[in-house]
Figure 1 (cartoon, rainbow, N blue to C red):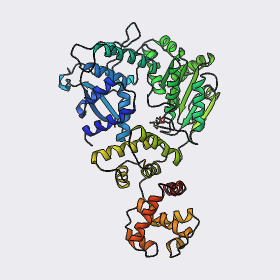
Figure 2 (figure 1 turned 120 degrees about the horizontal axis):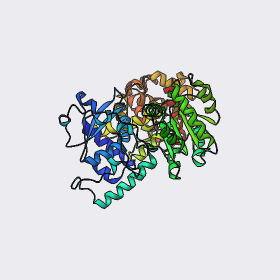
Figure 3 (figure 1 turned 120 degrees about the vertical axis):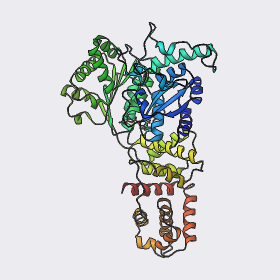
Figure 4 (figure 1 turned 90 degrees about the vertical axis):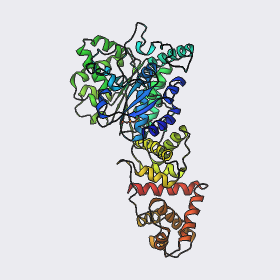
Length: 511
Ligand SMILES: Nc1ncnc2c1ncn2[C@@H]1O[C@H](COP(=O)(O)OP(=O)(O)OP(=O)(O)O)[C@@H](O)[C@H]1O
């Protein structure tokens, strides 16, 4: 996929985000280019090694500042979901060239600066040049007025309004992903408890479950729930702080290094809701655990809400100090399990609707059947499908979906099924013998499963109509075609049949 297509597809996906109109105009005018290896030093120092590196050329300095501080993280997330690989961006004014940067001056994000003294760092601060606050608690590099003629999209008044709104937003919503709200979270059996507990905590922070400890596998919605609690807290005027344990650790290291531990403590102890992601990473880091222990105690004593996420329950975080482990167990521990097929389909449906992307149910079921454990991958598949379809300018059919999804990496299940396995699964599901199903019998309780088996074989394998006919007692290809078409029509009007077929598919995917 070339960079122009990647960028066009990214722009379509930004439609559902609350990016303001002016920034959207800048993004529409931006150009994405691949960053050559020789320019990788421009990326944030914590950009993953294996990330795809791009430069986003935007029309002016102001756009550059705002997109970097406010939206870069979101852009990287959207592109990562679409491309299935981490993405690192550097946002530049389009007049910038690498050659123009004097070699003796390191890129600004690599220069050493003391940690910003703010309780509300901007979103993804680690990717941006560290902002400097002015006396009003605003960030100078963002609040700086634009130069005359710097852009021509809005009158100064509009810009001023915009800036005020953005400052307020940035200070309030800090690093929370605008897409991760309760409204956008699909509830199923796998996450019902975690969702209910998160909602209870958001509605009455510090009163119901404290701490709330959420755990579950990769990409199952822990961070999403954490941010949803955060948004609700911010909306009700509370001071919310979301940190990854990695960020917490870095801040402590910096606080010790720059002798700003008092400020560090003041910051963490002034919040109403503390949200900590991936707590398992503080285990074994002595001074981080020590500081977190005191932070926890202070907040707890003041009845401030603490919500913690991890990939495993407290008992399984082996090198965690006992006193922290026991505190994590004081409140409620809720797990998130991999979603069932229905939930995966619902998530895909909602996501497709948000993108105004019409995806037939059968394709939703197909994707949901292939990605079973990780919702991030599930979303990635949908993004990939959309990008693939746009790139090839083809109608969205099952074959297109298959081609798009099969080019994905290892987390998806490739169809390794053969016709006999499918026929057997259908026979098992309807409690009939394979022989009867493949024979000549014409009773309805045999005929329908036979037609379903033909339909599924046609969907899931490249077996020809002729071969399918041979498997089913030497029927000719037009009979097979008729059966497939009949099932295809019926599942659009018959919920029961649709569910039965989904259940068989799910069973096959599990095998
Ligand atoms: N129940 C859900 N409804 C809608 N979207 C969901 C749901 N669960 C997860 N997602 C989406 O899946 C993606 C991954 O979720 P999230 O980042 O919260 O996972 P995580 O459990 O924190 O993963 P990790 O362990 O990798 O940090 C996000 O885009 C999130 O919005």
